[in-house]
Length: 226
Image 1 (tube, rainbow, N blue to C red):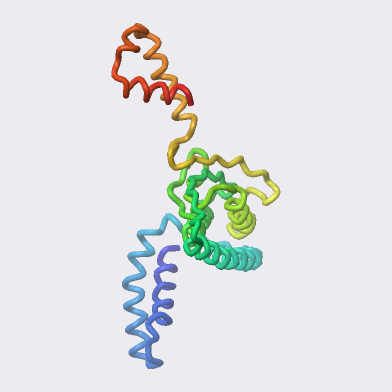
Image 2 (image 1 turned 120 degrees about the vertical axis):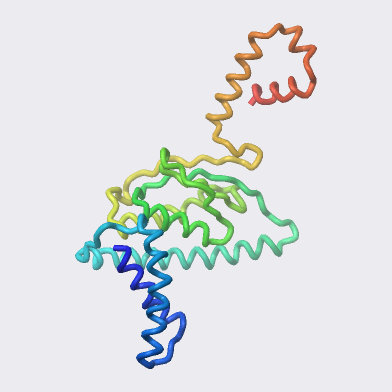
């Protein structure tokens, strides 16, 4: 599959370069594009399937078109939204990190969704959790997480058909989780750490704890109180 992609890069370079319509110029540009494209295609070969089911292409085209329409619409809306937030005197910006579980499971499907999120102004894919099959998404304003997640779900509905995933758009998605900037790690992790520290402090003498450094006790108290 990757050699085909390398040749496709060579053809694409003809349009990018704008070579003259002469055999020597076309052949030279194609050779240059293929020479650069082959190593790139080889390095990214894990993103490609071992074989292409040509019979699936006609079925996928409607989903590709719907995905592109939904994506372009969201990019336009997001551009206007970010421009407003930058120009507004109040600067309505409240960043959050949202964990968005996915229904797509193929590498190409996950990569497409993650890149679409990053390309859209105001959102950025930070990381992927393979165990949860979820993306960590940083948003410029997380006061209404559903407003952020709804377009992602729409893209995912079309991606399920585009990449011939086992899941269906009718399948329910797992709930999202929101992590404010001051709490960047999942609550379960913080709870476990707090529990461990509480257990250790329970073994100490209460008088020793009272006489300990104020900063340390205050920090432990804050974690235990959450």
